[in-house]
Length: 188
Image 1 (cartoon, rainbow, N blue to C red):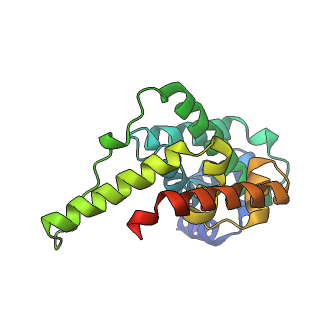
Image 2 (cartoon, rainbow, N blue to C red; image 1 turned 60 degrees about the vertical axis):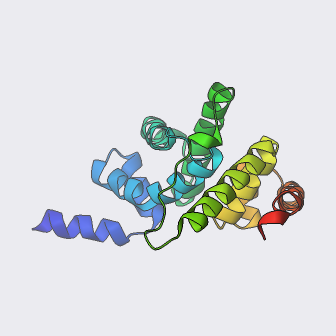
Image 3 (cartoon, rainbow, N blue to C red; image 1 turned 180 degrees about the horizontal axis):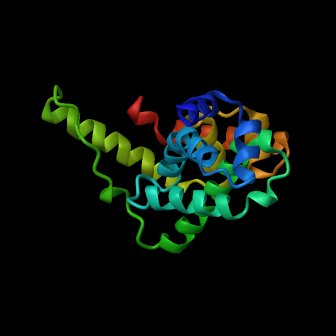
């Protein structure tokens, strides 16, 4: 019973406490971090890999790396950005390894049950166009765009995540947005 209460308390504890316990080898605390950040890491990775089937593998690899390298985390309160940096690097590594065979046409999103065939085709074409446009962006611009538009990161969080100045993050994001607006004009 006491174990159960402790686990529930961990679920509500702030990142500094949970990460600190995980750094000390607490598997339950690490499980809290996995539950807390898997959805965000999956969404980010899915955008980075343009819907590739490797999303779950990349996220899992990131958590394995995090568990092994917890001693490198200097500030437990920044575990979120540390985890995102790891998954970002893993995703970029996967993109580099798969670049010649990565194809947005392999992405098959389920259609809403109340959509007409024309709406389904249009939605899939829009997703394919977005994926193609994202693939055309330079890696740094795509990372900034995905972190901001999909992850909801602030400029400072993007800068911290990518290890660049905030002004550089703003510039990369501005260029990415400008390109995406022009490229996706027909889908407005």
